[in-house]
Length: 485
Image 1 (cartoon, one colour):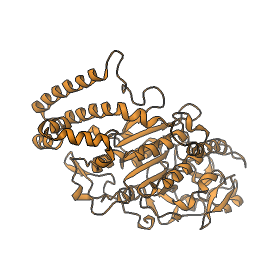
Image 2 (tube, one colour):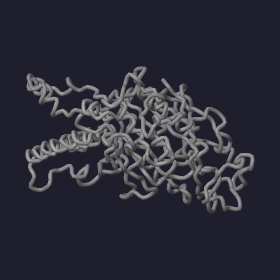
Image 3 (tube, one colour):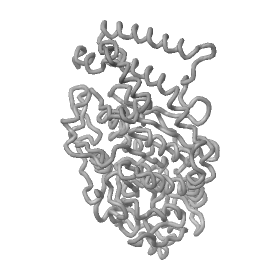
Image 4 (tube, one colour):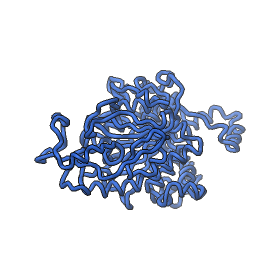
């Protein structure tokens, strides 16, 4: 990349104000008196919107609710009543057909069928089958699109999560949120374009470890990486001024530091220096915007009640779903909400019941909340994990207790709002929820559809690195047209 062109593209606000001082005071005063009049989409100057944005977007922002550990589609969404007759019988070889399985069950002498112990019933205008585990989600079924045939090649957690988040099983690629930030820029200069929220379970995290690269920028500029908000202390590390440092002192320090960085940039032409300057400036602005964001004291009691009792406890999934709505309301492009402990190889009925009690009400509340505010039409909400669970049992099997291993061949996700057709069920699996029999959706197809809802041509949103053009969907991906409104 040409350093001189890069310098022109990433010229700081301070330089701009210095060169256009005449009349800027009036504009600044007006923006303070009525900032909404000046709220505009700020595209990323590194990207060429005309190159890949060929149609009007339906979604302006994304909220991605990620169930890390892989929730069981068989116990929540993919109703297979005939499996009751197969209890403790072996999975037919013709169904597995030699497909790869994990080392955790490959040594089992047999693969006994474990029907779901949970009851299913029909909901919504089209009578969609939903587990008793999700009574609140059942109430919004006409607002969401259920996809039963998502599939992936990855069979272990880390490569699978890396794959669905970055488009590659190998670390080092930009995450979905980073691609969206790179391509579309920010809607709010006082908050990052990409924010990550981590949800606690019973006061802790547990489950599979989540690494920063899952919301990292990869080979893109660091300005596009996700910013994690913490549930205790400063929402962002070092956001508060150190003891003894005043607001004016910090401002002077940042100004002088920016001058030093500018000198260094002129000497070496490294674009990451400009990214560092931008990050310092964002952190300074966040000192005011983040405390206001996380203060839910002015939310109506009716809204708080809708999200459930845990909404007032920072870091819980309920609190993070409300925070996700507040972030979307303030123009954050991409909000990723993680919750772990879905990896249920044993004692699945008890563990999945606990997890569903945690997430069911807040998920439904988020959809209702966005809808009541008129935001669902241009906010894309996504729910799901990295793969599904097997129909056969891992460990000891009884009618009331069983475990399930990893299953990448088919699993369920749902989407809502932002250009997605509501109230539909897409795709069909076989009688064992083991293989896709109709309308498969690869994770590249899913990501292509997400970008399409944002008005982005996934084949054209690229970045040249190490001699080739990279993209979120690699060299694959088809938009799932039947899911589009």
